[in-house]
Image (cartoon, rainbow, N blue to C red; front, side):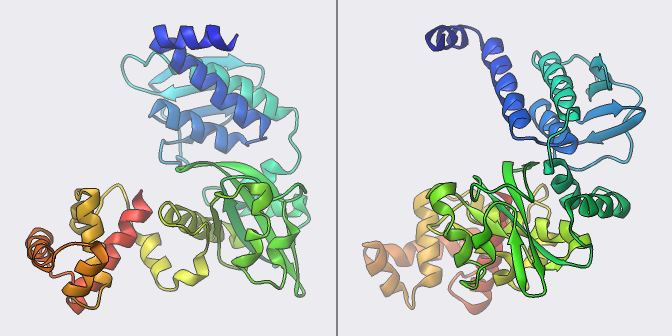
Length: 349
């Protein structure tokens, strides 16, 4: 069967795309992703908003993962009606070849969700800033968490451990991540899938103790401690920390360690990047490495030694970069400007 599928996908791009859609929704269903996550996933796959009307209530998300205040009455493309209601894509004009498959699998996934998936649905509601305060409070009560408890959200590429309590796979702009709630009550901490997360070993070393089950390279972003009814703030911080782990050897980052940089991250819109960020994204790998070394080194001669290049060559590259970037990356202001732009570049990636 695997050989047959391989031959089919190599011959027909539409078959390959359909199989990708089927596999994606099957994975979401098996992991118990909630309605919001399913709609976000459908929107990402289609590149346009996805909506569902379930028992008379309409919910819609755009491809960036934002919940829409209302769904458009027109442009209900690839509409699929099923037992619980209907789903559609808000696409004007002719639809893509995969649109019908996306809405069909979305409808099936929502029907499977309706059969009940434990606490995963409630975890998704708790961290969703687009939900109303009342919806989040209700979800907290169902999970047995007092809204005044202190919580922090942990997101990871893989499951943190074998135990299952307050955890759920969640659709994000970075793909499907595992979201875990850690709760602090009177100094005692409890986590969804890894009780080690809240041990006295510390906030960043504790999740690492679970990496044997999460995978040696699994990235773990840790959010800030907040009141449980403000969990979306911690989830947002955890996502920032997780995105910043896209490069480098570190696999765990606590958003608290970002300090004031977290405010910058929250204010930044990666869809409208600053010119300094664009300038960094246009550098080739070698030039980017030379720039980083120039910023970090005590002198140009030291940078040349680190790079294994001749001093005059590095000097020339320094002058070229200064002209290209519009600032001297070795000056005090230039270093700050570079570090800010590099931080935002990694965040947008």
